[in-house]
Length: 348
Image 1 (cartoon, one colour):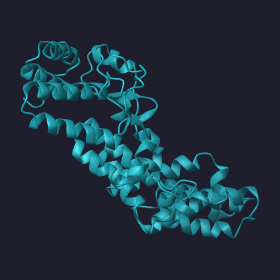
Image 2 (tube, helix red, strand yellow):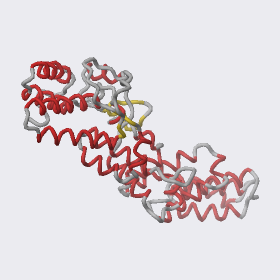
Image 3 (cartoon, rainbow, N blue to C red):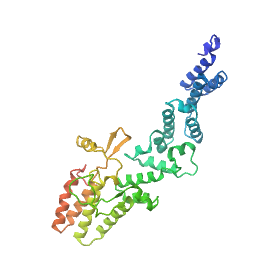
Image 4 (cartoon, rainbow, N blue to C red):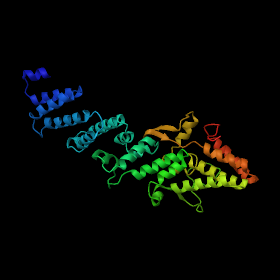
């Protein structure tokens, strides 16, 4: 290419000069590519075909040349995204997003890396604590860069902070970390808890039913109120001096934890996406709660662990003096045990 340019026996030096810079760009010689494109700019008309192609190559160069995440790199990305040429080439968005995601990953910013590639709703099926915490940190910054604003802000100027708080609390609840989940929910106004669903996991039904309507007589709790209720029930069960009263409360806890699992009708309180196909795949030999799903880049994590429910049913069965209560706990325990992944209880 350089030999042809040097000989000068060509009718379109601008085309050849742009091609030279393009080859330097592909080779990773960004310094020389920039110099070559600068010379080529003097040879082309701004609005002709070669000028637009040069615009595209220069934008690709600026994106490719970013080597680490920094305020300068974020500003470069923002300028590229808002440039005229960006919307003219359909591959640019994916190219830029992949580049930024790669830089964020190398810089240890897993949350920003994730939302650079995928919408945050894809995280709901398998939330990751490190991703959520990183995004919460950005949402709470007062001096977000233009690129960060594009990643975490909505069209009305608010951020995704409250959705992330609910997502984090849901993840902790699914792992039985009730106190931690409640503390996370307290980071938003209590009056806003109802905006993220209302539930009642206490309906005592023997038959698995994930879509059965609740009786009108049952009160509904926000997620935070439900956690407070479960924690209060456990406290009263431990403090009860009457064995039957303790057994009744432990049985109530077993019902609640079972109904919060994949198999219960209140599964939405501790999970955001449930696939009926997961149970079949689990029965066919999968021993992982995370199932691949084309809709979600991190897969779909199902809340199938019912060891907590089994633990409380066993407590109720052992403590009960009332035969009917003991029989009910005895009947419930195998229902939980059939879905338990281990014969050893979590809190043996």
